[in-house]
Image 1 (tube, helix red, strand yellow):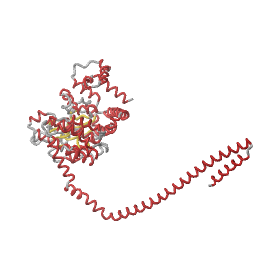
Image 2 (cartoon, helix red, strand yellow):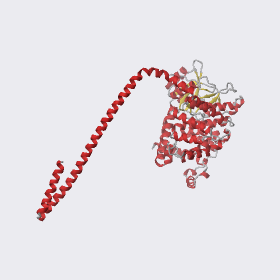
Image 3 (cartoon, helix red, strand yellow):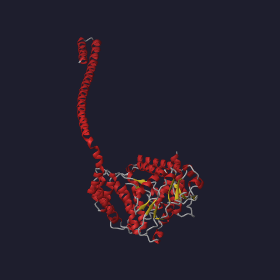
Image 4 (spheres, helix red, strand yellow):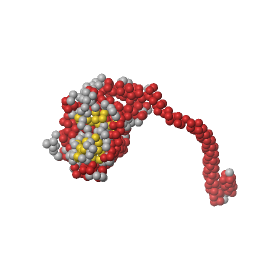
Length: 545
């Protein structure tokens, strides 16, 4: 019932803002066009005082954090979404309507156990920024350090839980009634998103993610992450260093300080690959509201990352297969790409590799040797997914966050430096990573890392070998004993089956004998009486056997 009520609210908001007017009905099947034309919301006029972008933004705000997240992703895709809509959706990055300041103050004091005046020398009750899940206030510690205080929206857990229940219900229905949906693994994707979104609600998790990211890029020219003040951090409140960077979406301001835009775009690509392949720990919510550029050294620009509530990780196997796939793409070796998909289990083992390779080539070949301005990875991914569907490729839930992050990175790169040659920027990094990961130097480093453990275990090896051999001997004896028991059991079963057959025959013969005896008695034929007694005698002999 909760899911049905939420679905009703979604339909109500959909009709209130007449979002059906945003649907390109000319591309829909005739039946669906007729259904939309007959829908009851057409009785409501399209709000004349609101443009389409504003209506979409207000609808997403009204529906809550999950829909706002969706709008944030769309805001980074000017290649797919018209400019007037993109400009409105950008407001969802940090300008969502705030919740009342008295609620924020009460929550901070209850979480930290002190009054605002005891905690901070200065505190601004007006939010600096407000997003889908939390809002941020500026403050100053008694030490003089300027900080920002992040506070989770009160009651947001209930809204998220309700939306997740609706998504789970829709996913379950899709799996039940659609083979195509089962291939896309919607239940696993919803479960992954549940884990991710609940991680955002716990600011202790975000604080630990930010600390890890800061440690990974310690003293790096590429990326800076603000310091976390753990003494002032709780599940619903987080205090961190205040930064004064330029929002990455403020292109005019970046140009005004003579930022090296080409280097900035290239470093964005390098940061992405460094996080994914070197650290296997990547910021997975890199929309423009969470990314800034340092005002220092515009000739040597440095990114600043905030809001680390969503991070992604990959296993070593996924890292390896992903790197090999990307390198094969960059080398235009589509047969290798297809073979890797089979080896990794992403497509069935029965897939014809040469046919899969030809299909991938038809999608990817047209985009090579083109700058980012002439490529839409969103469209390429859609085409690749359509191609993969023909070969029963299953969606890998562990890669969904990575795909989302890659689209965010592409959207940023397109805004910063559309002439970026993604291939020449990414390929050398991947080649270097593969060389460092699997080359002689890497093997020596792994040997050096494992050697102390091997030396420590060396004295125990003879005993371990003896124990293993002893267990093998016992295993042989156990197997022999089990084989003997199986033989005995088989003989017993055969004897039991033989007896059952004998008894069945005996009862059949007995029945025949009794029937014959009854006929002999009734008809007065002595010869038949003898035959009946003979049958009964046979029964007695079989039973005794």
